[in-house]
Length: 74
Image (tube, rainbow, N blue to C red; front, side, top):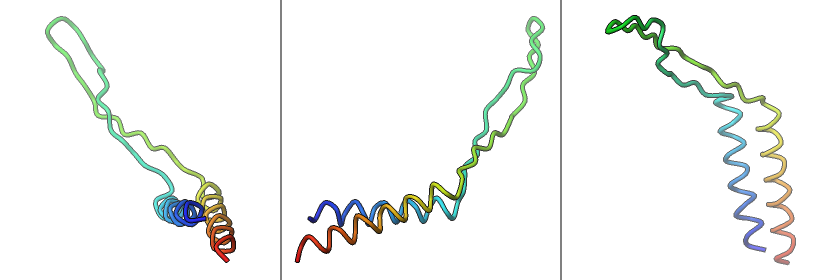
């Protein structure tokens, strides 16, 4: 089935990206002080880790879909 091959390749690519980057971070502005017209803010960086097992599961699932899609063509 062509869909299985396509989804398998996509999962393998996503899994590889997850294994390389293992998380992402973002910055948001937090209000520290607010007294009348005086305000003070601080930039706070948050990091969201992604466990490597998720990347490996995506690569493994993509490999299974790829092999099953290639076998069903024959």
